Image (cartoon, rainbow, N blue to C red; front, side):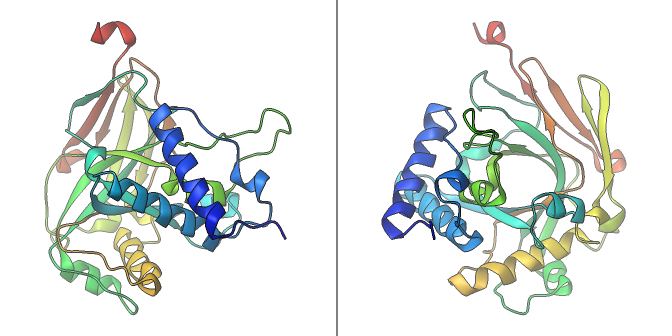
Length: 275
């Protein structure tokens, strides 16, 4: 069996961190370690998080990905994945992203839960999440992979272990629109349009996230509990996208229109914009 041991896990984490800093994706880990498991991938992710924390970055929350059954089937898994949100990932609503800041960014639409109390698994339920949430707000997530989509020599495609090891492709987020209590709105029926340069590219409703976006938060609290991790008061939890990801190009402006709940936007500058 070709799986990474402890030394290889630490070395992979260093390579992923360097890839993020250099904006140069690395070869698929699943090609190098064909028997790599999901738990191996999370071990790499934890080592990567530790590297970033030791470098002065602070964990400010978590993201949940692959929350739809369609995406899970495509990735050959039966549960979502997750990653860490860092302090330098937050972009102001309407903010601008410099060209070259990401490798190949994509945009997703979701709801962010900001916790007023700690959630500690196992046994966390949707009702626990609703009680512990201080407020919910619209959000955009920016995805960016530090692992190649396709190997240029073999055509081997990136797999779920590559994505999980790469902090679930997490790269940035934008919060905006209205802030509201979780019981003031039927969260299942929160809907949004994702516009790129004024044209609707995607639309969706939050019930697509595990039937209720709060279910994703409960799943996460229970999933990380065996590692001694809890979801802390004040953390931001991205509950999972209810639209397909859309690639962002230099010059693009993205707006997520949540109707009465407001809008969230981000601009990807062209090279000449910042000269």
